[in-house]
Image (cartoon, rainbow, N blue to C red; front, side, top):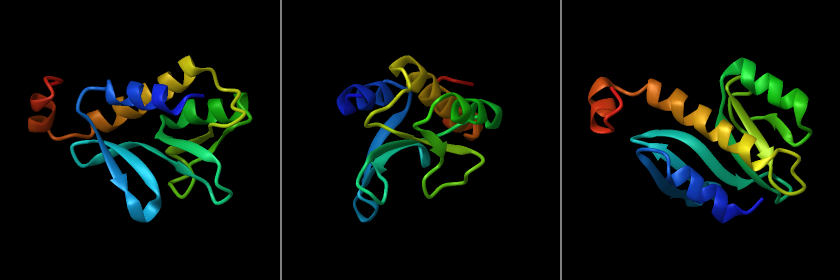
Length: 120
């Protein structure tokens, strides 16, 4: 998968901001102060994307695709990571994962933050 395509899709989400986390060697994407996507690498140097998922959706994805696994250095129940090299997840499904993550994070925002995004 192309990193730039993924990043452009993430940044198209309402309120999405790109934040470099130098000490993690990762790029975080947040809505206000809440992260919904992380692009980085695992301990072997493989590019991964980590997203928050509805628990049932995340479990289904792990069973369906070999490159989806419990969130790398994240809560294994609520976050999933996807190995981007040699990935069997179609781009459209990855976009669904990003959408789900954004939806979950936006739902947890304060009312005034949602109003700022025109999502109340």
